[in-house]
Length: 638
Picture 1 (spheres, rainbow, N blue to C red):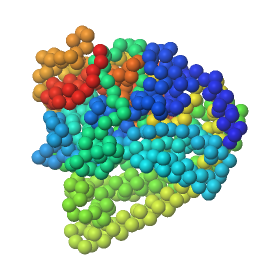
Picture 2: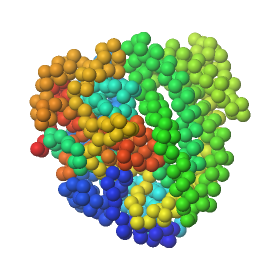
Picture 3: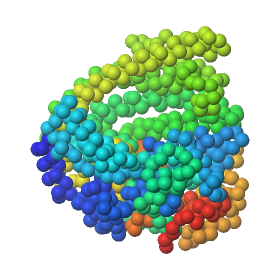
Picture 4: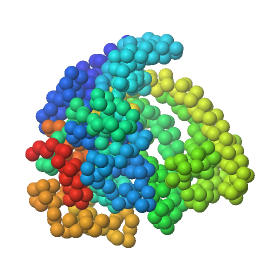
């Protein structure tokens, strides 16, 4: 371990990070990134971004709901994130009578804000390298030392949640301290026709015109510390909130993103990548079946659409990304390039062979559990036997729709299951029988699914334990081979910074995309007969009149979205996009179709971060929603 750390230290000591690629650790910015950032236009110091002794930009960025990012934009706890990040919570709060998802919502006063049960946000308080403290320890001694580190940190920070997180395939460890606030209330969102404009057709695509935002407010106890929901709670006062720039962007402008990227696979072997593609293909095929039924039923009935909106959106996002990933892997020869990289390693060949053997040995179990989860695990009837009447489950459960989904998934499961792992399926009639027999059938099948899932998960867990030392050695070999070049760990839902510039791109010969879009594109795409491309009457009226107010660009246009070269992935949704002075200029919300292999390899010529312009967001709040009270909370800079 010591030898490895010395090698990494030597690697990083001479490092001058390049622009664009990289999900960088905040404590290392001053040493490794500050100069490179300044070279392309940044006017901030590393301490402006991450500082333990004074407020800094990191205090304005939060993990939202466990899977997205958001940022504080007022001194009274107001935050903004993506519409698709708030989507499930907005759906839960909606009813056919008050359909906030479909119609939008703008709280015109604080007392109109709606509590969002179960939603929380986490602030990162600090991050500290504890690799030395864990060096040389294994097994129970390692586990015990981690527990001591967490316990000591908790004693020093009673309102916080410490955790030890591994990086570089368990070669490096950091102690990260979070503070979680659980009283979060819904403040604003555009109608779905704006917040999801383009729907699944435009998802992962450019050009884009989606007004992808929602707003919530964080509340705290009298001492400004975390507290359970109470009408006595007050708006949280963050240590830092972001100022808003209305200057817009130009090609070549410096931009950076801070957030909580989820998972990347840039330290995996070719065999692991092949396995990933195979597993994702099982998911794609199963979800194609399920989503077809859902969509057909949603198009028939607006009540069903509301119930299944979040289920469909959650399923289809990965479904489309994985298909794009397959195409990008083939077009960009990702596997071939990874094999070439492995072939050039002086060390690590034993690790590569060890990983290959374990991947092969777990293939059957991995495929079986994936098919099980994506088919039988998606049938809500199997969940209903353990639910209480009146629970949130039944609010969004439609038996007739679930029955059609079950019929389709049963057929798909039977056609694709390995006989070695096949579960005997009951008849659909028995499963949905309006009698005790139906409950017994559902419970019996649910227990069989759970038992097999548990068994297969155990196999995979054991295989993963066998894999860890090989994966650790492989990461060490990659770091050694890249000595003198930029290096950063895979994303793992910890706070990172990525930086680059505003830039267009050319996806193929003869095709070039500009770096921004405008309201003209919204009007050009409008199709009243297509649910994904509807434009609300008021929005259309304002756009046709060019009533953009202070949110207009220099030429009088309303810019809707723009592109940067920042390196993002899932989890970065809702992340603040900031200018050279740390002012908010947009929200990151998507990647582009041509770079769907970016979780594995960064493609500088193709990879772009799609951002909604903050001016489009605030124009919607003020002009469409009439929520001047929200606008008045914000601090603008020119």
